[in-house]
View (cartoon, rainbow, N blue to C red):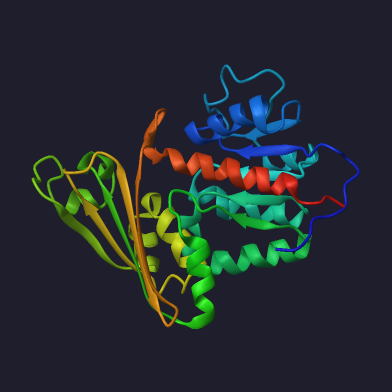
Length: 275
């Protein structure tokens, strides 16, 4: 949110929060093409097997204080919502810039205020990614002329909704047509479907907020990809987009575009002047 503290190191030290499929992909990209040779660390849960067989030179931490003693310049959160609330604030307060991927956590207004305060106290940047959706630049621009409608519709194959409240709405293994699982605000979607609302949160943050952003979630046996549809209307006019995202090969519940958007945001961050 503000400029980062001065650093006399020419190559930034990068911490990855979480080494799941997204974190491992990011690590491989950093070491192979984005910033080969950069000091990289990962924060994982104590007892986690995620770091087994990790790349040479990767520092592994299970404690936030220990990670802070390593003095990262930037942390990229690729974990779960709980990490956004428990780990990200102390990093920001310590002056560490943070890229947040689990945007669904920001549906909590109190957490958003806490993160903003921590970033301000540490003079650090809190950066969010667009993830699996597009058109957010147009949405943000349209706010200047007034927006009457923002509606996001998410469609996934029925099996992609296993382990969510959708299992109480319908028999996911038996439906033969697109079935509405949820309709309401982005705020309610973030509460009920926290692991499936990073896209809706990105839309809400770029546009009219969590309470005014409409959300529809569907299980659709006719689709094989994660489908994201965004409709926006206002005095500026109207636009609608539809994205059909292939899944990350290592994790069928994650859109490949999400990992690519993180890499794009990291490249943009590295291009910013460092004092």
